[in-house]
Length: 292
Image 1 (cartoon, rainbow, N blue to C red):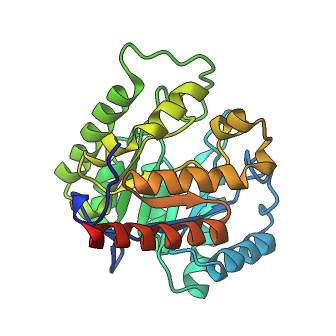
Image 2 (tube, rainbow, N blue to C red):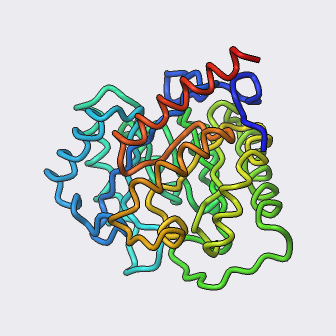
């Protein structure tokens, strides 16, 4: 597998709001902020608003490049209506926008939530549904927002315990991501504002997620900034027999490998560790490029 470094990247810049980030060597770190009572990782530890703001301050201090606010978890659970999602994420985004000088993302697949979030200060729509809502891309384009196109086999909140693909999983995911990214560009969103995410563990078995991680160099060749959501995922825990609260080291191993294959945005729970991993890898990649 070739290392993807420097000028090997088809899109060496990510734009978030009015900021442009050079990602030839240095990966960005997105800090995860859950405003859900049933998060798979923290179990709702930061659902309380004061706890949420305290966590945000911690992530910013640890070196997050931007923050991602989500009000509905990806997996199955109790129904969360539109108004409940708005109540969870919009005041949170408004508070973060007032307190911190860095880009904000909203983790939602609803165009109406994205629209309200942009009005509140968000500049990224992180959509794990693959733009299932037909109005999503138009809302993002009108608001000047960046987007994340994520592969998922069926859809958010739907159990998918035995996912089957009729072709290699990397081939299926690459085709899906290319189609969604092209849709985003056709809607008027520039390439540097379109990120693609393989959706590890979203409609994938543990071996399928591992195969996808191993093949991220192929996804980097699609031509859009490559996003990695491996932090504390199930497939990593299965590799080493670790429960969700004890997957920090394997998450950073996945981050380092992903960066070597072209990933340039890390969605992370442990921002301090992800930032250090990204900085070390940036030094390695730059030195590798300089050596020819």
